[in-house]
Image (cartoon, rainbow, N blue to C red; front, side, top):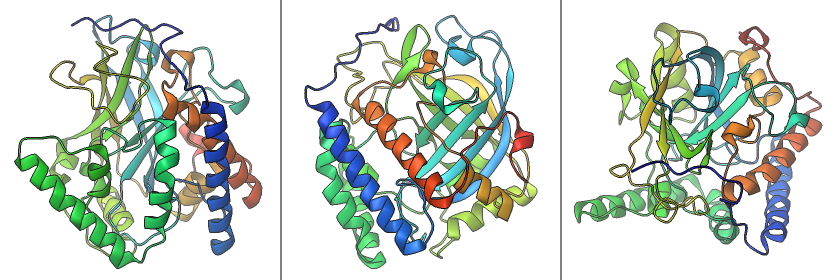
Length: 359
């Protein structure tokens, strides 16, 4: 099937969306402030705990077909990149509690009309998580889910582990019956597998030049062998495992695009709907490589956790985020970043090259 063409009216905001977004941002801000008071230091209101800040390169492939040679992937080119690897909760939890893992990628020095010129710089951010859909695929569903997410986040570690274990049992049962577990079960069923071996997804859609797509990165080479390997249940087990790998080895990933071919079957407004890979497979557009390095030195941690910001709206118009979840992220990420930098009295900065990222 042919990929659909992007058009300005492809999004359909809900009538009460602006009010819903304001309520969500207020609730997230209150939780962020509460956590900052507890730690006496402000963190992100989501993906607060980092495990690595990694410098590398993104090489766009030559000879891409026209539908894939779009946006920053239009021409063969090698970009510098920095990635922050994290866990999803908005507070610092022990790694014995399973959680979704995040891979925030900043591509440095891209050309094109800016989505948010006020953020400064000339970079493109892609924010990805290690499962392809969201349990709360629209802004209204997300508001309904906040109570559940906040309640589970406040439970003791043993209770949160029990929730994840139960969800994994349900996931196996559903899969065994030949069905696809829904996004809620997938989100709760995350285990403590090595995050370098995971596949990551933007979950929500974005503009892909003339088309619409979801993006993903998939491990190759040595890190692909880490898929499914348990890292243990110590407080910093994930950071230890990632840092140990990068002390002597690098990592490589394929960056892929899944083009939308049918807006009814592959909607942009509901990020909980899985886009069928048989109808439109993920196709590789670039290679992401990281050499061996110290990924969590004190200076690197401060750069990633305190100075840098990652925002899906920090990029070019050719990769405009789409759908209600992406629209709420614009307000939420802006507010969270400003609050974090103001409370920590740290200037937010966009790197112009990898030399701006501390070793």
